[in-house]
Length: 174
Image 1: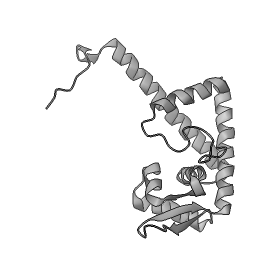
Image 2: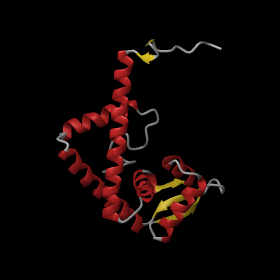
Image 3: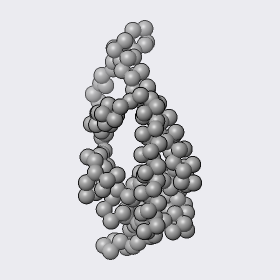
Image 4: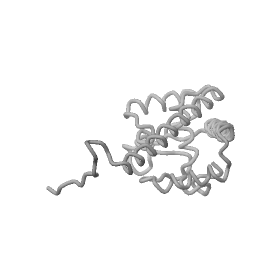
């Protein structure tokens, strides 16, 4: 087995360059996590929907035909199959989603936005955009700087999704 290169350390602590890099990562990670939590709470209050429901609605708004296999939703949310089924059941009961069988594979079930769900997803997206504008402006970050930050972070994404490149046929205006 090949040896794994270890960073140099001084007295068991990372060298200054590594420590600075780790601090930058921690600042970015924890700041984005807290911002995400605050934004989701803002949108939850505005829409009276759980963040897990909002994540499903937003995702389906961005994909072709506003439908995706249930296993994609599980991966998106990091939920088990049972957890995803509960969220989708709740959204179906609310009339926001419907289940569709795959034409090509009877083992696959799609979750698809209904017309009411499409409207709810668009409203939630507008609420998120408004909350984001408020929070970005309150932090004194200009729109150009925010766009540059987003572009830089997108470069680091090891598995970009359908909306990484911005609005287009797969992500109309979102």
